[in-house]
Length: 112
Length: 114
Image (tube, rainbow over all chains, first blue to last red; front, side):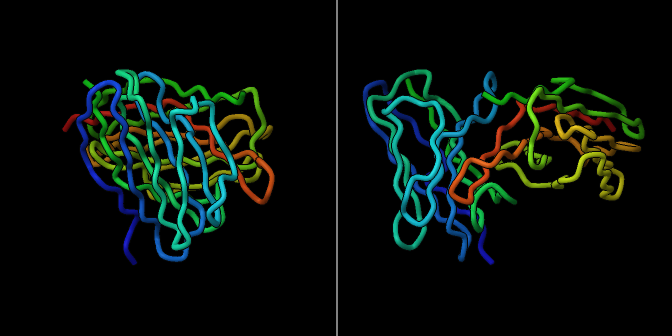
């Protein structure tokens, strides 16, 4: 059974640009959650999607958005990038949400 | 806002030593999960504890959930270099619509020196 796949693994962007990250969950998993991980703040919850609907949202500005497709694949978008957006972005899938999470390897985003 | 405090933040020990990592909160959680994360990878779930006072053992790792379901500890016996990594605790709380939201602690970075 394939694990959670995140692409790309690394991204370098400049301030003001936008970026789209992709996540393919484990087959059969309908819940996809996104987290931002930084050394200072740890893992912070961005949002969760279940059956193409955003079910939960963390305390991030509107520049952070996401969506989920009918095949459960998910994308997150960050517009007008700021230096502080540099982080490891992790995607996690689960059957229904909140129970055992399976994480991808993450996308390391650097904003210059 | 539910917060989870992990201590210590950093731990460097010699191979063969024992250690305990703590995870504390003022909030009650439905369950508490422990993950381990290695550099360049995402966290991997080690265990979930659900019942207050529950103790689970995973080889040399012992996990305990506090009676009030607000805190947890992870004890490693005879640490090995392969135990090196970032240990994260995460508390689950019901957020409605059949979903549980996880709040993560900032982690304990463990280095086991051969």
